[in-house]
Length: 190
Image 1: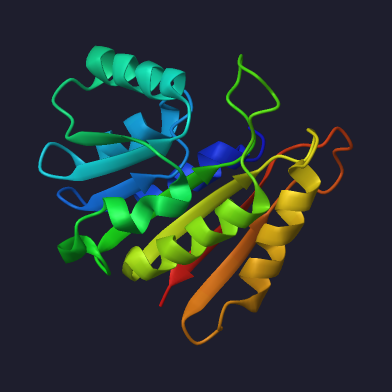
Image 2: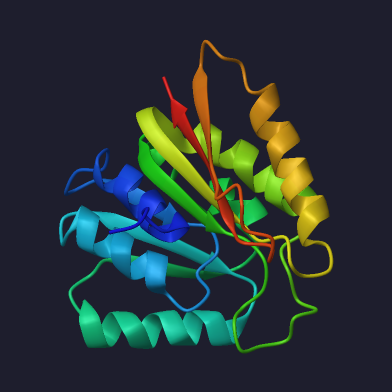
């Protein structure tokens, strides 16, 4: 059978916590995989915000949604994930059920356009402020590209510094793979 993949485990953690009708955020829309997953979980009564700085990522996400979940209420934002708090309505602050991050670059595109430690940490801070109690942030980290290890180190330092009374942080990785496999940090707000 094997262990659950990194992305599969992130999806499982979110599915256990998010209810239909809630609001969720895909902080890095990419090809729309996580956006579609979140749209299915929150259903037609819920709402998903998806962020990306590349127009082609939002175009791919929109096309995937049109094919697979045309009734989804998804707002696509052509802006940095660091600006998510400004893009989400004030009445949703403190009420978001989940925020997903899939860091690195857009597959099939320019590998020089990558998420960066400074904006990612800003976005993670914003995500925690947006979360409801019991809400979750998942961060899939990739270290095999230039800058990836530095970003992963910054995210790990950020997670380790979270106050234990307010947050639980989980690290999920494969320990014996040597080819820079992705790994997951998940944060639950108490």
